[in-house]
Length: 246
Ligand code: FPP
Image 1 (cartoon, rainbow, N blue to C red):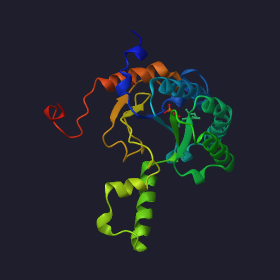
Image 2 (image 1 turned 30 degrees about the horizontal axis):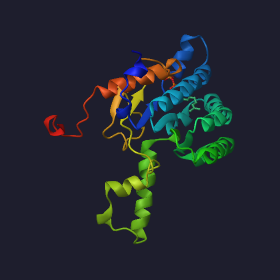
Image 3 (image 1 turned 45 degrees about the vertical axis):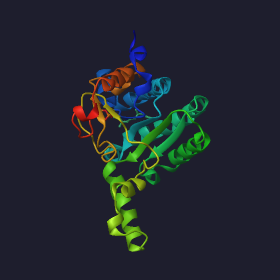
Image 4 (image 1 turned 90 degrees about the vertical axis):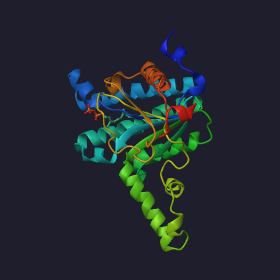
């Protein structure tokens, strides 16, 4: 049986989040510049989106550009933005055909105008699709997101719309970018790095983590299936004992 056939389709994670890492190192191994790695990374995105749809994942969040990535050399930032615009514009028709709904989270106002326009157009076109929801984290960092939420809550308190006693997990979640999305059951990071890097800090509280040495441009849907199988062989306890789960 191949990887995909071994997956229990009734226990597939509803939401998978991925830190796509290793593009630069992959490019260096090929004797190319870092930007070449990002371009190749788009093939991995395509394959993984397809694979996620095939096994019934409902939400796939990809960490495409972090707040910290703005500090990379200007040439690389510009190339990444250009790549985002061209990828979104080229892939939207296919995503739409596959019933994929596109969403974005992060400080989107900080994106170049062309990028934001392309993004909003695709989001609008696909907003009623009912298959996989593809969430792009762009200019995203979890600390930014939490501070943003806290500021909104503080404003509500100041305006007497909310009392301090009513500040709860649920209230905070309402103000996160992911308020309409379930928490990820599985987080994957490629390229052998074992860090969370300011990604979905709140939402990953109970997620299973899966790390692989594979560099992002080499990652394909079969590797996603391997990660899902690995997840299905784990026991999720949410702080309880094994016996309590019986
Ligand atoms: C991390 O590798 C990757 C990124 C910062 C960019 C990810 C972007 C893409 C895969 C392309 C566009 C994606 C979409 C959704 C259209 P790195 O550069 O940190 O690699 P390194 O750790 O080897 O240097």
